[in-house]
Length: 193
Figure 1 (cartoon, rainbow, N blue to C red):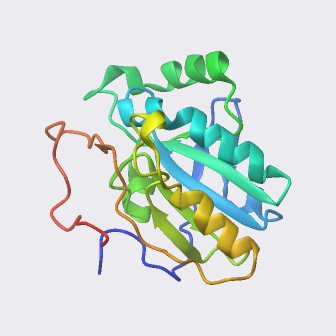
Figure 2: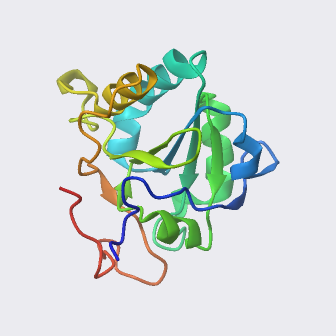
């Protein structure tokens, strides 16, 4: 079995605490036609470089029934800035238009097969995976972006078309796994395309 969820597979459930003081699971988004789950963090330059692009996408598609959920699975022992307390501060400073959840056990990152930050997973109404990979082709420097794969996938799905490119490789820092070297990747993790 591949490390990362395959196109057509169902979204794994979760129950995770969020920076707004609540706990969320898939059922809390049951009425949402399209759910974007993305693995992110506080410190990664690829996340920081593309956060405003992701914000724009989330805002643009909110009235089209698309909801964004960010999950931070990074080990705070590997990178202390990825702690829950720092997540709360970051949301207070930036007021991002998504729920920001903490996956301290890293079980959700494993269930989804998160490879990097950011790594996007788009699910349809039945919570089947229709797109996974990068948001954009240059997340570290928004001025150099030429392709927004996430928006292309959302546009295709919302128009009733098959997603033109359902798989791309996420671009960013690897997930920081507990007890492992900062650059370690699970042995079965591999490029998606």
